[in-house]
Length: 375
Image 1 (spheres, rainbow, N blue to C red):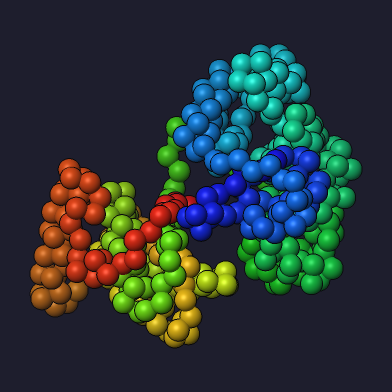
Image 2 (image 1 turned 180 degrees about the vertical axis):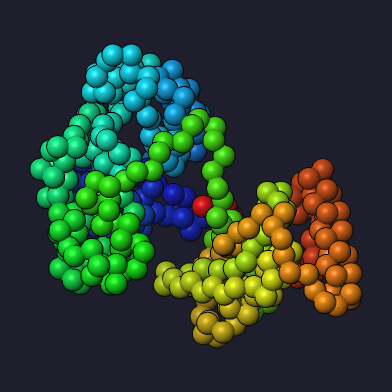
């Protein structure tokens, strides 16, 4: 059985799968047709995001009965720090109680990892599924963790895994025992962080419930029901995405210093491009101008597109001290743009998103699916 996206909206991928499907080779994010070649009798069910979110919120409320240090990781996972709230009970005892309550009160299975840091707790939660508690101790973690495939380590994605395989790092133990200076020179800062994780050196604390996390990027992407072919269609869609990203920056009182675009063509080939802005901004036109420039420089004419995305990254607070322009006309124009943005934001907040659009946005392709995200 698998939860699948809506093929009619061109989101026909595997969103989640059960253990039987996993054993048959079905993988998350692959196309439904690919999954069915491995598992012809796959039972497909649609996603119910609202219900998923409702249960996630109810579970978090339950977790907060044990500690006020509950940090969400995605929609359906959390880290809990029970160091100061165990009341004399063992960590494994509390984990087993939570697992039992989730089954009794919500009729759901729950896999839990117990460890001395967040990275190994996450790894433990994936170690045995769908209904188990795995304990990874400081003095024995090498026996459990090091034999596992390196891709089981948190933040080792497909591209990182491929790079590690090229230097014959196949397991977490291989990474842990690799020369630290070498992995740092080979992969940069990310390689050094992963080396620390593999050696159990994750010191990041579990954040307090409701803590505001630092936002480093804001992005929007869309998948259109028909391919975008002309530059007018693409530029209109980029314009609409850029304006929405800018509006969200203004709501959060943040400025972007870098713009990134993501482009996926009809054959599912993907590329990303990014560049720094001349000056930090929360103006949609400035974000759009750079996004369009990146697209024109990178895209091959005539190649049909399935989806595009715009992301504002390397954000700084709007209250940051910035170098002002030496020219009065630049300052006047920025103030005028800011007033226009404020008016549009107010109108759209009262009458709904998109009530006021620029002429460029009217050329965008109507889309059935929109993805907003923040990192």
